[in-house]
Image (cartoon, rainbow, N blue to C red):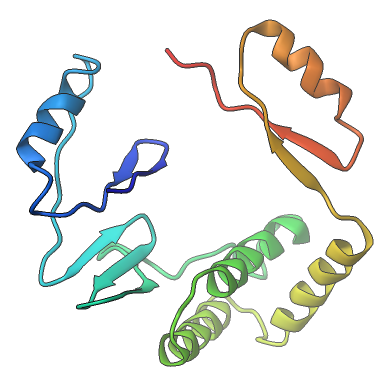
Length: 178
């Protein structure tokens, strides 16, 4: 069994012969009485988790980009009165997602076309992909940031993390549990 969490979304792959999902749901719902967990099981070997569609085959998994039925291809339009950094952030997000997930060549090519359509529908020339990509790549080559996880244990934690504020060593401090 595995356990993956992002804020309030959990993904727990499990072996059906070894795990009783009703017992698991009962356990989770009794951890904190104010929280109410629900279960969404895979349908026809597939389940959506965050922006991923995970497909289970006999001996492997594959992923695809998932967009909710209410999805629109809106990002900050090129002619909007926003800083260029904000506009480029959305484009970098799309590129990072494309490059981070292990998509098949067919799905990767399909996603590239979708990204180009998103750009065109928001007034961008698709050549912006090169400039956004190369500016980020240059920054990565010149300064590499190292992240470390640091457990929150009180107000002193903030003082310690501030020591590293202007360095290339960054500390991720998860929020204090309620």
